[in-house]
Amino acid sequence: MEKNIAAEKRLNMFHLQDGIYFIENAFGKVHCLKEENSCYGDKQYCYTGRIHKGLVSFVTGKDLSNFIPVKGNWDYGFTLEGLAGRYFEAENALVKENLQEKRKFVYINSKSTLSFIGDSTKKYNLYIRIFDKNYTGQTNFRWITIYLEEAR
Image (cartoon, rainbow, N blue to C red):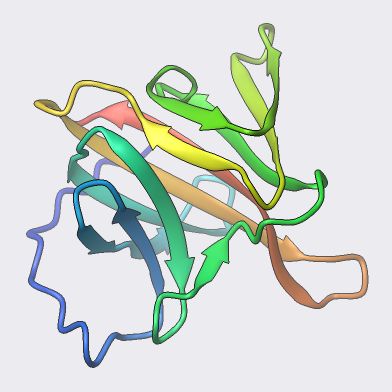
């Protein structure tokens, strides 16, 4: 993954720009993720910095009310790759680990949560890729891939 270290600017919560946001729910901090192209040629969203322990979420919308992925009935969720498999923990979810591919598949429901359990003193590069189209081509934010690495 490409290294992305950008200075974090203060968000105007009354006039949020369109985009994807990473919320440290337990700490009360909101980060606008930077959009860039992934090594696969699709869009990815990135954050570089410290992450505090506790509940986290990914959202979009002017009032930050649209969760990504949406909380559906077990065919929604996320894939944890890189350090994300060790430093993020899902509760009330079905977690399947693929040891050969070194990734975890997390199937969520309406009660599922995601928490950061890693070292909050280190800086990380956090990347997400969103798989948001269903078979009819409608946007539904059903699945994301979360990749985490230590920042250099």
